[in-house]
Amino acid sequence: MTEMLFRDDPYLAEAPARVAAHTPEGGVVLDRTVFYPSGGGQPGDSGRLDWEGGHLPVATTVKGEGAAIALVPGAPQALPPVGTQVVQVLDWERRHRHMRMHTGLHLLSVVIPLPVTGGQVGEARSRLDFDMPEAPQDRETLEAHLAMLVDRDLAVTVDWITDAELDANPGLVKTMSAAPPRGAGRVRLIGIGSGEDRVDLQPCGGTHVARTGEIGALRLGKIEKKGRQNRRVYLHLDG
View 1 (tube, helix red, strand yellow):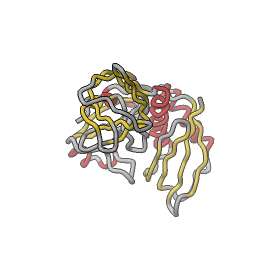
View 2: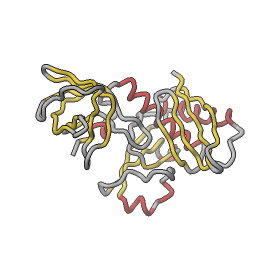
View 3: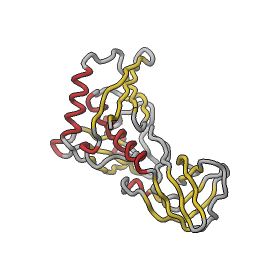
């Protein structure tokens, strides 16, 4: 099992670790990691591993067997032996853009309060698919609402509930296409705002910024028809 440091501190960009295993595909499993594995529409992190006498570029990060997280090299090369002490270093600029965009998508699900049928986080352009028979006609109003939520600089919080509590509150789940991250008997909730200022609360295993003001300028892109009931809404991060 890999200890998921990114879950407790998404701003941790560098940390020591020990090589716990190699995967048959040529990946590296650490005992603890700052690298987020691809999942929930968010890409896996990239960066590098440094150790005495070597370094390894990390192209992406994926989920391995069980609770392991595997770092995938950019090209086949000799891996640090099991037991080696390494320093893991994130491509922080890329990760931070993913954090900003992911939180921005949560805000998009606030201003378009319809069931989500899919989504993908990118560095500059992301998307959500909605169960939305007709495209919205008030793009300017939606963009203004997004900007208002960013400018309010709302706190982004992390809470946990049990699987049973989630089953008793199905309205928390916005995404129709993917089940909330379960398996440990509890589910991670991402909230935006608190108390009377709370605007969103939903299950999510991804990394997020601490406050909405950190997201920056958001812009709506194309809105595409994807089937009879679905519309794909693109969101751009400007700057």
